[in-house]
Image (cartoon, rainbow over all chains, first blue to last red):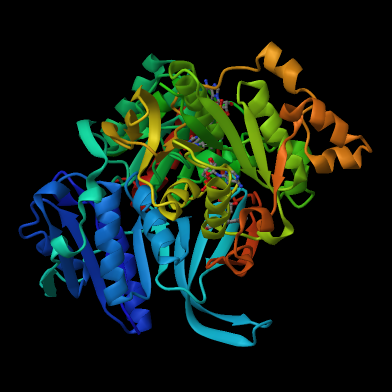
Length: 339
Length: 291
Ligand SMILES: Cc1cc2nc3c(=O)[nH]c(=O)nc-3n(C[C@H](O)[C@H](O)[C@H](O)COP(=O)(O)OP(=O)(O)OC[C@H]3O[C@@H](n4cnc5c(N)ncnc54)[C@H](O)[C@@H]3O)c2cc1C
Ligand SMILES: Cc1cc2nc3c(=O)[nH]c(=O)nc-3n(C[C@H](O)[C@H](O)[C@H](O)COP(=O)(O)OP(=O)(O)OC[C@H]3O[C@@H](n4cnc5c(N)ncnc54)[C@H](O)[C@@H]3O)c2cc1C
């Protein structure tokens, strides 16, 4: 069987977390299919980048280096990837559901006529029987994703076309190094064969990127605040609790819209997906779009004045009451019971 | 300077954001049929960008193109009320079951059919399928460059466009040439409301099918007021290959659908007292959830 491919994204000179998470998933899928894991990176200066990728169990790293490729551009990236996929014919191709991946993925799949499943929350290998055509498939990629505003979960398959392409959001899969000494092979792509002048009709005039400040996905303890926090001052209670517990502060969209917190802290369908050991939801009602980003937390504590808040239905501990009273009580209790 | 021909891609979608109690079935899942059909929110942002271009470049026209069942003509009327000039309803049984690849093929054939254009404006994402794939895929099918996540069109002329786009962690200003496809974000300005004069003018804009169903004489009507006709396009009209549409033209298949049921977990109530909360914290420390 042909390989599992991950299109890696570079962020501030490093391979993005979402790509490392996909490499981890890709390695598992490749093991199941008894095939190779391959990756492609595109950029201006890719010296030694493979060393960040091999430890995840990558067998081949394709590098496309060119001074015109410093920042992501739709057409040149599409040309390089489609040429590479025509040549290597991957079985599966994964990419991040990031601004970049959601711009590139559909373009590539449209060119290869290969089908693409957006925002998968789970990827599995399984069989499929097409009764009408009298055909069975042993090992297809089940691409599992929410749709209809999170109200349904669909399993999508792609029986006849290759690669089976899917995007996944950051934080949905776990990243795990297979072996720090894992060694694969580097293959340099001759970009001049793929790139045409017309690929550069769109040019970047200016770019302002914010540095990543908060690291929600990497945090095991998350204290999240919602609209029910009531004010930016009350929101500071969450930072106090986060500091004593060694965690990060997150927010619902309503809290972000109200200006209590930065968008970078938003958890949910249109924010970050997190899976910490513990998620403390303070003044958050628990709408489906919020739950989509946190319901896989190992433990959930809900702090809410409303006994019937939907968040309570998925919480392990429910504390009914005012955040302004409860958070100081938690801080006090923690300090008392630890040295 | 002659104006620009602008095409807006707009989709009619079930309002998945406001799943009220009446749209819930007894088993706690969503009754999709009971959701009201609305103009996809980001397509309204797209329409606004198109109308702003029309305001800026004299002589421009805005055409709304939608693919869907007969009732999707509603989206076109809404577009006309807000300032669009005309619209097409791409409708055919053969489109049923199309994934984004087949959808973008059908839409690109319709765009080619309806004549020369300068810019195609789509929403970033539809709130039912939630993929954000149709815009870029249409661009690829038409062999055009794309600029996604548009927040503002900064400059535009017959040949050039400059756009500010919003990415996850920042903004980018890019420039390119026309024709091209742009997709518009929810963070772009909201769409202007209905325009009274336009609403009067297009109040009776209908498709032939709608008028037939109402037993109205569309032939004389459209002879006198041709602008009232919302043109319907079928697979044959746009010269699309049926094999590339619907289920047969869709590489992705839905293998199964599971309704999300809000299930209650065993949760423990914690007393909101010093003692109650201390007990919980002690448990969490003991089982190493917090350290
Ligand atoms: C549960 C479920 C899951 C699905 N998952 C996938 C999947 O992973 N991959 C896949 O390829 N297909 C999938 N589909 C099919 C897909 O939803 C349809 O093809 C749909 O018609 C177009 O995709 P979208 O709603 O995601 O639109 P998007 O790609 O999100 O729409 C982007 C923009 O394109 C324009 N546009 C889209 N559709 C139309 C239209 N009909 N008329 C005019 N303009 C339009 C609008 O401007 C819109 O804002 C799924 C369908 C279901 C029911
Ligand atoms: C397409 C789409 C995408 C979305 N994406 C996201 C997303 O990524 N993330 C997200 O979070 N939301 C998202 N939303 C919004 C989501 O639907 C909800 O509106 C939002 O999550 C509500 O935030 P909230 O719980 O903070 O506010 P509310 O729903 O207003 O809840 C406030 C809660 O605080 C409680 N409360 C009030 N005062 C106190 C007090 N003193 N002490 C304790 N509790 C108190 C109330 O009982 C209530 O339960 C999205 C919506 C749409 C349509």
